[in-house]
Image 1 (cartoon, rainbow, N blue to C red):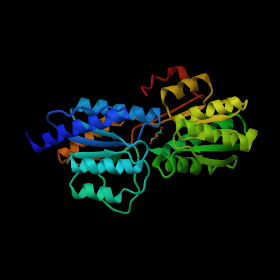
Image 2: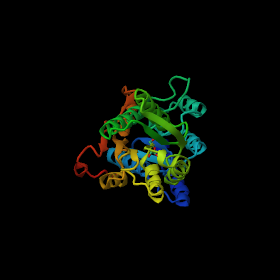
Image 3: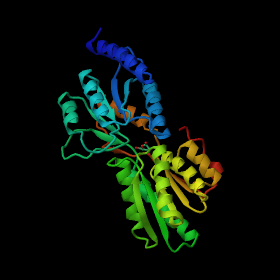
Image 4: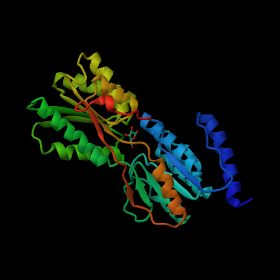
Length: 325
Ligand code: AHR
């Protein structure tokens, strides 16, 4: 038995035992093949759960042994997971960094160990070169642009002379939060009707979406014309608060969300959300292709963005195919 097979079997046993404690099942290690360590952020949204499932399914399809660890929303857990992957001598490491800063030391350790690192979904901010091989994830800036373009079209259609916006932002210092905000702000900057009343960190969580919305309604009441929410989870948390305050979401207040999970699309079809910008969690296949290329010593693209679209009340929403997350 090779050293890698022994590591693989030992790790499978350890992960099974540790995941039994936190309700997550480990992928069984396969006899041969490539060993991929993946540090996932957590389970904060339907998007994230769909992303985890897709990575697991695609690893299986490509015959790649997967060691997936759930960091439960903590950067220190992600750093510890990457260190374990290095100790286990995996072939490739992939991770979705919860925030952009703070990875230099652990990534230098991976580099020194000769293990290539792929960024999935989110980016890092570092002055150091060559710590990661590539990024496979959405163009979050473009998502922000598309959200703002929708709002401008909607304001035109409703002949609004001003639009007061409240923003429920994603996790502070994360790539989607920064870029979805930048794309949106850059685009509305050209339209004098648009004012952002306030932006609050909703951490991509449904419960925080509700809290933020309660605060906005208490503070700004009927001044609010539009909600720009950085993900479906927070939007779904905000909507009941809007209804409790006796406003009709989608009519009294324009609702714009990002992700495009099934639950949000159902609510779009009901008319309570006006626009959902797609962010696909289906990154698994591109990840496995990249892992194979790295293992074969082939060049990989530095940046892979999936194609994404906009779903809104401007279209026939009955044509939207089932989302799968
Ligand atoms: O990084 C992608 C974002 O993270 C998704 O929009 C959100 O739902 C998830 O939690």
